[in-house]
Each structure stands twice: as C-alpha cells, then as structure tokens.
Length: 194
Image 1 (cartoon, helix red, strand yellow):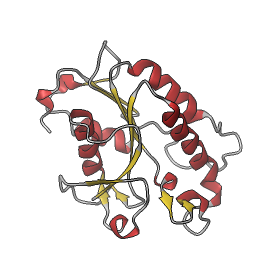
Image 2 (image 1 turned 90 degrees about the vertical axis):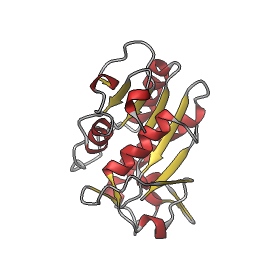
Image 3 (image 1 turned 135 degrees about the horizontal axis):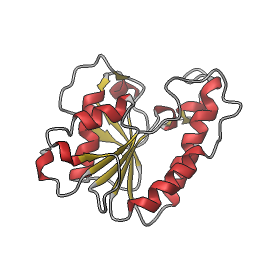
Image 4 (image 1 turned 60 degrees about the vertical axis):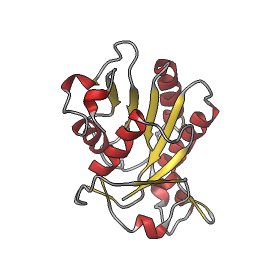
C-alpha cells in the first residue's frame, strides 16, 4: 500500500494503544494522512479503542453496552468513510460456539468484556448504512513477532493451525490499511493470520 495515493486522511481512534500505534506507524510516510479529528470526508476510520490498558481487577461495573454505543457513534460520523474495527480473538467462532464461551480457552473473569465486544459486533451487523469490517487478530498477536508484510484474511472461525503462527502488530496494521485502501471484504468479521 502506498499512503501517498490516498485522497483523504485516515482517522485512528485508539491511536495510543498497541494496535492503533501500529496502524499509525504504517501510514506515517505521509504525515498529513493520519488525523485525530474528522475534517470532512476521510478515507477510513480505524477503531482500535479499548477502555483498558490491562484487564481490570473486576468487571463488576463494566458497561455491557460500551461497544454498542461506540459503534453507534462511529456509524453516525462515518458517513461515506470505511470503518475498520480491530476485533477481539475471544469473539471468534469455534466448533462449539465462541472462544470466550470455552472455559479452558478463555478466563471466566474476562467474559463480561468479551460479551461486550459481542454486543458491539451485533450492533455492527445491524448497521446497514456504513461500510464496516471487523478485522480480528488471533490469540497469537505478538509484539515480538517479526513483521513480514504478509497476512491472510479468513472468515470468523478460529483456525488453530493458522493461529499457531504469531502475527505481528505491523502485519495487522498492513491488513487494516490495505482494507481501507482496497477493500476485499465488507460488513463482516474476519480473522487475520500471519
């Protein structure tokens, strides 16, 4: 992807987190192409927002509709822009349901957060006026994984064999930026593998 070819800026929500920083770093060859405000039409909105820097001690007070409201707000401002959300691996499908529903694969203490992310995904699925995509990295997303410049997009069913190969944040960012520039899938959740 060549950032100089973009006609409009890219807005990254959550640009201070790991995934958001990787998206911004992948697009900074043209410093005017990344913005923190919406100056009219933008090429894409990237949502890498999480309400936590680390899992809290308790989710007792966590709002299960946090992501529903976030989706509604993004849908209102997106207008003609493409929205890419960085998904949560726990929401991917397995042969028996979703990752977060398997107590051997996902800690029960984090389940309210995964359920809130599922509520957000359901809200995207009900949205008809916005070009959206949830790109979900597998559990093997890693700061230590080397950037390869390559990735594979698949459906929302977790492939344990493909997930065994660590995915770098840089390769996640490449997938996000490519889907802003030249969309190949829309209005669904997909998994990105290294």
